[in-house]
Length: 185
Image (cartoon, rainbow, N blue to C red):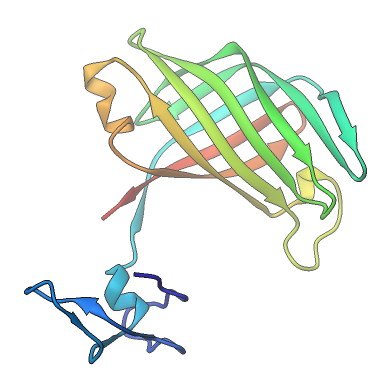
């Protein structure tokens, strides 16, 4: 079923889905009209989990085409605090594409060594851009959202592998800070 627009619960959707749906008898009917909110269910909530502060070196240009450039940003260490605590392992990197529309598309890969000695592999993709009316370099861009994915063999950390997460990141001189939130039902 395709839904063209998501709305908040209780708010009627302009152009609400009006089409066939499967009934309990698995028969098609076109008499049902449902809003996207009813289809999607309640809006998910966010729960703060931890903060990652990754130290970075200056970027290394890798490739340039027209108005876009691919840069490698070495991750040299850092720390993690909150429900997950430990150190960012040196040796990771962020592959950052400076796009023609003045946004940056990022893909970081690095590891975290917890205080208990467990290793957590991190793949974190995201978008950094100006909000309407903003100007300046990457430290002055108000929109930096990420989608981190975690992998680990540690039994006590499997909660990281069973949930989806979003990150709200900020760029500083010499580091990037990411507040990580678990998406809850």
